[in-house]
Image (cartoon, rainbow over all chains, first blue to last red; front, side):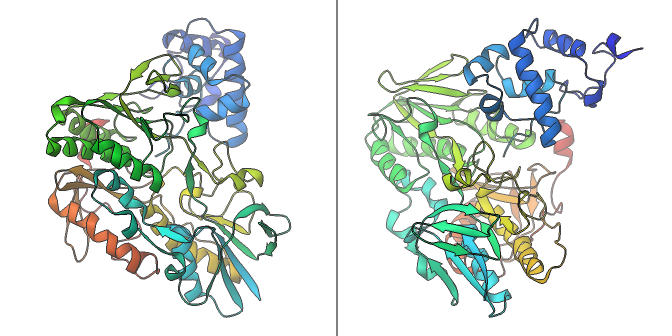
Length: 105
Length: 414
């Protein structure tokens, strides 16, 4: 199977649905994850956020938190909640194929 | 003469200064910078609004909290120049050989649109400052009935159990006052439950339930309409209130951002096990000022203090650092009616029920309400000033121990 044909049934995920191996992620997988999460078809604005999350995670070694996304991606908090309802930080990370952002305690 | 410079003299900065003065030779100066005249015992801020602590007894003159030989500079830090190993104060500069950032975390209500305004300290209060907690006390006294909302704006916050304790103590307060039936208590949190980790979240959540405190989970406060008394989330959920007790966004000291050393909240990126800053080999970070994924709490500052003093000493000798900090935190959670719970956890192990093997006071129950835990919390007042701040040995193991913990609870929750 080539990566282009990957479905989310074939990628390894944890019990909360986060990818276990970020390298199995493809834009096509992202679209399927978005549909599963009820986000629907991914727009350019969604992709701005997802691309930022992947690039930032690659540099920082951990997925960005919500405030970091809103500060650095150019998409403000209100829009983030419209794009990724309920929990934009968690949801954007999941669709971007990243681990769940570490909840600070 | 070489200089160990410590910025901030809260719990972390003070205990590290006192310990290092004992450990370092006379060719090292130990200098602390802090602008505040008084040292505030922050754990009592939770009791102040309920008339169970007195402001004047919560503070001591800062000069009396330092061991002999610690130099205290009563000034404000404006910026750090890591390249020059220099710190700019209000009007002068100080050179250092090793720097410890211990400038804590601070509430920033201005980060939420509408939170500040005419309603601030009228129908909206914080309890993380002496002024806020003191004013809230009068507001609670005159509160006849209606909806009281406790809201955590954003994580991380200092002492993440404090808002829960506030809700528990409010339940007791209005019960004793005789008007609990007229007060609706609501707990609005950005988390998906009462706490950050599953087992504690379940146990604390059912306690809120039993006490008739309604939880609004995944509520991310975006703005406040102070005139209409409505708190609105980013996804347009609304909570009306008569009295709002807010835990505003927390951020690190503003000079951290000015120095280019902070993350988006002004906390300093820190190696989780050595406490060295990620930016510079001559800068260490301790207490609430770090970006570490553990609680911002005095107990953490204490446990970090052990590792930090060892690593500072090693840094003065050019030896390699120990990776000794495990994220260990423990906190008493005051649950009302003279009882408290104890939780104990670290980076990897969530708070679990069981017993805590504490010398002297005897085993204490974990994640369970008992009278002895409440007494433990009160005894801590004395220990804070007399044992912890002076940097004397404290009868609590530094690394988190699994002894007494019931691990099957974690398996059930998973």
